[in-house]
Image (tube, rainbow, N blue to C red; front, side, top):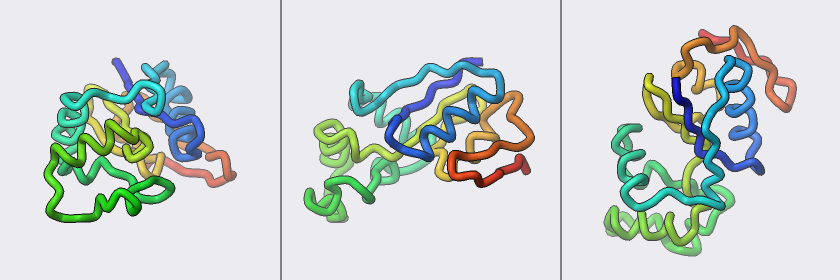
Length: 133
């Protein structure tokens, strides 16, 4: 099974998600999207695969979202994609793709549904123990 994670190593949720994938026995393709942002076409594919509008791919907290006035409901998908391409930090994280689906794994235990052999339980960096439902 191919697992791909759009990862930000500075993000605890992203680090936990990556660790959960590896604990399941998978070694994912890790795309550090701040260094290697997805293309316009790829962003549109991700939104469609996840089942969200382009705006659903955007992160507000800790980003220039407000300064760039991206909350303006009149902005087109093309304008929102252009903003993500210009400032990749705007991309929600982590995004995980597997043959079972694609999703934004916030919280990180959302990745359990995407794995063939998810671990029964996992201890996050902050000590929280999460279990598979």
